[in-house]
Image (cartoon, rainbow, N blue to C red):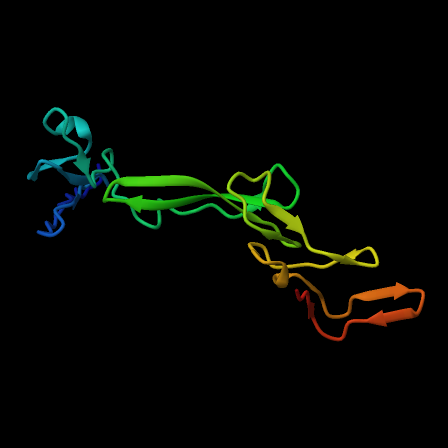
Length: 166
């Protein structure tokens, strides 16, 4: 019979006094009960009734920009509108989400519902001007460089962005 070597492992747990979160040998994160920071917990069930476990791997998550961030802008149901979920932390543990609207590129104005308030940029000889998404004023509309227009007098090309003026 061959000699067998037996290896023993020792886990060292480091305790940080601020904040009092521990990483256990199994990768579980221990947090603190919100009413008594000296009580370590993994989930809300480890705390007194009605209390929450803050920072434990099974408890309440602290709100940060990483876990509470706004979504990207995307087209809304109506043409000329965009929508997103604007998210921000309200206090330490609450992520608030609000629907936000703006005018899409090529439109200007302001919308609170994604169905009205935005107007298409003016056109010249059937070619519509453009604008940056979120533009609020008609003077944000323009014909971009190298736009080609033709009318009864001939064909011409914009050599620079030409903004609408009142």
